[in-house]
Image: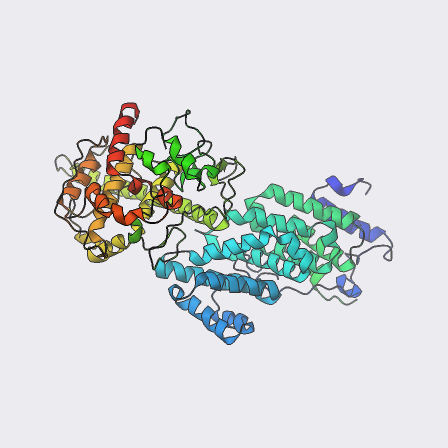
Length: 291
Length: 328
């Protein structure tokens, strides 16, 4: 197509350029599975699993990533199975009768657990949301929310050290803070105070050393799927900057695993399609297409 | 805090260093001034008769015991020291920057205090205030509509004028007023009051009424209404160790206090005089001065409740001085 450096193309042009490249270049040269062929991503063993994470954000049906599910107490119970019995009891009391528990302690327990358990951190936002609502209704205060946010802020300040100490904990932290951003709202608006910190975390994940780690790329694209659209609304300039980092990383960076590249391509395309899953992308990334 | 007082230095006064003052862009003194280095804070107030307070510490005022919750939201079981919304540990104001700023695309003045918990609470308060003003406007419209219907049906002059009054819309002012109201409502006295007297059973002039933050008032007028309202709420204080707060009716001598808004203030005056409570602050404070003499001066306590903190005499003095220079 001869358009020169792709760096200044708009996203949709770029992805079509990339797809075009796939058609023309010999397959064995390409760093990632070719598109627009009947083999699809699956042929290289890189089929992406449709994410079954739930999110309260409304994006009905358009994306396999999102299933608008709210208020499933059964699921909440399930999530706290990982705690010991005493803590479980404490959490249950916090959910029903918040004024009778030490909410700061509860906030710390939840944050601590989120840093250890990635499964928990994905959905801890829901528990937090329930406690906040319960506290607000019962006593009209927001001690829990304040403790939670301030604890999150502490961890945020030391995030670089956290990452150095434990990559897994860092990933859990990012998952958790994005989950909180997703769930906790202030009069139906996302919390302004978290916008820049969340961006900062995602920017960190988009740095070269993080892109080389599959788990971090995976975390990055997952968060962007869940909250990218909202984040963009709050600050589109930073989203542009983030995606230009992702594009550059995808195209230029050494040491990316092919799965990472696939993940990056998918998110770039996802955003180009206005944060929606297109049929073509669905077919390419997620379907098992047999020749 | 007086507007337009360019001569004011970075240090803060009682009244200007309110927890909510950081909402004012570019007029706020650096938060570092609020950190507990009291001599600097106190010395600024040249007109203050509080010369004695520069050296001697002051204990938490008596009113703080009526607090149900500290400013950090925790239920207070004992009369622990009132902690200001801005804990020094959380707010890094020491780099001398303005403690609030406004960004062009932002929703309004943002507190420089980098405490997420507080930032979100301010956010919430702001959106609540916006909702309330929309609701209030609708209410006014409905009332106006209803009145017009009545007058159009032939009845003679309506009770109030049908002129649309201008509302207070400055977000900074509304937030500050809301915080002042919250301080008053965050008391055991208020809780007891609303339990005892439901809104429908309130007798105007007898039962205290929360000042309407959406009406246009001068700053001093508003502050005075708040003060009188809070004083009036003391009737419902829980009985303390020193005995009941109820005293003989002591009408407040408001003649010396300069206020500008006539309507609501006279209403507040009446309610104050009719209440059998300690409308006059001085005797109570005098009575408790020994009690308060123990303990250290707690700056945060002092700053978090500016109006109550004043000696009535000092307040009158300042009012009188300010009146000469005040503007509506």
